[in-house]
Length: 343
Image (cartoon, rainbow, N blue to C red; front, side, top):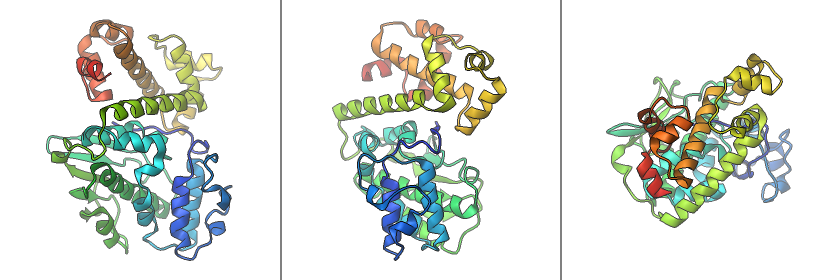
């Protein structure tokens, strides 16, 4: 299970991450004006609820922090201050979920609502669950910035799980895909677990025994309401931005029809090569969008109709009901009957 992002320069996020980072830097004697230099953000806007910012603006402030020789502890302190209550609907949806397993699953599903700087993937195994960060050393230009973003992101995950669980709930291990830095001791200090460097990939590993635990604020009605709101916000983001938004709109005009990328590119007055390039720049692909549209249609059919699983499978272009059920399990973690009961 993984997440995909909107465009880096889209101003669609409240500036809570930027505000937390600027606050940490100010405690080191770095003036907000210097922290925000070149970002296009005024210090007075950080607490303005009407102001929206982009991932690119947040990364600009991270670059300033590094250029200003901030403390190595800066990204860790920032991640530790970013409690879920700062994340609006996204945060409240995670805090009200019914099991910690749902927290991990929904954290990926709604990640694009949370000023995402890195891709995250959640994989559950019989004995453990793993957050993986596959593009941690691909998506940004310098090793220093990549480490900064990863240190903040991993600390956020540890902080958020504690917010949801209502008690300290550290990983059992953290793996990092690069050599141990001079400040390596900060990793175990903030993650609360053993940390190993020079590993195959960047990941946080949790004991699967925690997944059935009930969050402290679990509430069925609130969980359903907030997740429905997040689903709507995700849908609005997908269908209103960039080339991916245009592809979504083309596919949703005739639900159940899934033409080739060449046909869709032609409808958008461009070549398939150009469309592929635009989608790659937005962190997605035509195959991923088709999969997402199928997921949206499947869940809508299950919630609002009495069609059989085989009928839905046929409408969505699956070869049989078994393949559809496997896809639904991948999308939602549930089978058709279980999903309908929840809905």
